[in-house]
Image 1 (cartoon, rainbow, N blue to C red):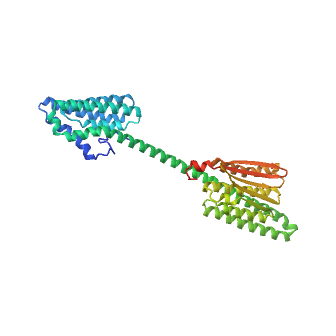
Image 2 (image 1 turned 30 degrees about the vertical axis):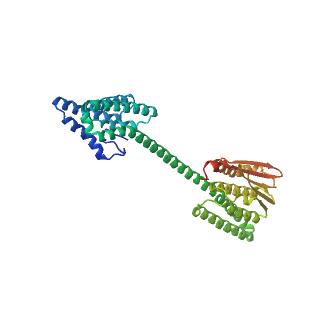
Image 3 (image 1 turned 120 degrees about the horizontal axis):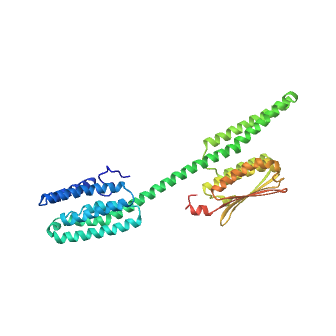
Length: 378
């Protein structure tokens, strides 16, 4: 951002000393003039030019173009009458900072044309004067040609870099939100269920204590074991935040099904060997929730898990042969289904549920196009 008190332009490729020299050189050319009138006129034009030039950075709309036109006229007059072409560099810098592409091209062509014409006229009228400083004048003309493009493309690059930074910051915020939601779902799926079980068994133990104290010991043992399991799972969630691995999750669901006396059949494990990490994490969560529902609600003796790698998608099916989804269980299972759908929505995946009295089949599909569009990031 530029303010009225900024005297010299920044980041132009020229040092501060060069810009100071360009500001002081006009006075040298003016003082050399023969008459007091020319000195007064030249000094007035210099002060007027820098006043208009700095105001053009803080003004907006049509006033900027009016100011720029006045600056060009002053530059042309100084070039022809005093042989001072360096004001054109200041104008070139300003044109390079224009954001409008059409305005930039139009003013660039006008400025370059007028500068070259003024230089040629001054060269014909003051041949010796221009020849004495020919190298500097040539460098100035090159600056008028190249400096606007340099500044314009640098500003576009900085703008794109700023937009990229904002996008990366937004992605980081979304990842934090998604991670918080994941932790909330994990706590619901683990700690919430364990605490509910502990509460139920505590109530049962209190009821059995007066009449069947011999059974209370077993209930307390179950409470103790459940609490230890819950504590272990909480520690795992808090201390181990790395992305879940599907092969580890498969081992855990096999152990869960085995302990629940449910026969487990898994097909196609090798087809999911090289999943992107985010996709693997989503499949792990869906597999865990699906098998949990099988254990808690299906009353099935078998569970079949099928993993398939197709041409355009990854697919996972979890099939049981139980009683299907009952109306009194739909609310409890619904929160788990919502969690799976939320995860799948994040990767454009889909969840299909097919439930009959002969069992329930969950189909989880994630398109592989996500991996291709992300250039391998997923």
